Amino acid sequence: MAKTAYPFIPKSTASLSPGDFWSIPLSNGSYGCGLVLQLAPPGSPGVRVSFCGALLDWNGHAVPDPTVLANRTVLAQGYMHILSIKNFGQVLGNLAIDDRPSPIIWRDGGQHILQGYDVIRKWTVADRGLFPVLEYWGWDIIKEKAEQLLVHR
Image 1 (tube, rainbow, N blue to C red):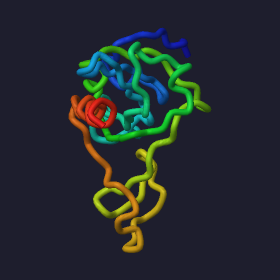
Image 2 (image 1 turned 90 degrees about the vertical axis):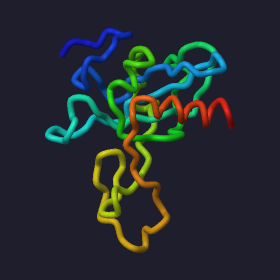
Image 3 (image 1 turned 30 degrees about the vertical axis):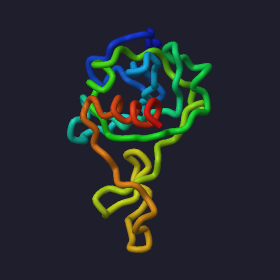
Image 4 (image 1 turned 90 degrees about the horizontal axis):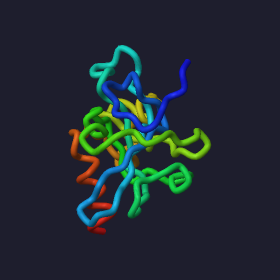
């Protein structure tokens, strides 16, 4: 398999890998950072254009690179569209597996407890209020979350 050349603008999720990151330009002139956490499982609806992605707890005045992103945490995550990357720029690089965060544990509509796309177990009444509900993000939601959590704290 050929090594990915960074930066690149993805045309579909086929060119993405977990750990790929991109910059999110913010209103104050700084940048936030998005990260591909997981790709949708084969056969999933929208598998060609959707993935589980995150906004990282990083903000800087230059675009991010792996040295500043290592061991950051997830501020927010959602199932998102490839336009969440394409409309803000390009994939800049990939974080090594030891340097990237895991997806947040959340619940779907009340049936399962998930970590990203992976089902951990069935949801029970005892789980009420313990986990956030999974979110489906439009292409610009990651920027809105970055503005709210990084600029307008």
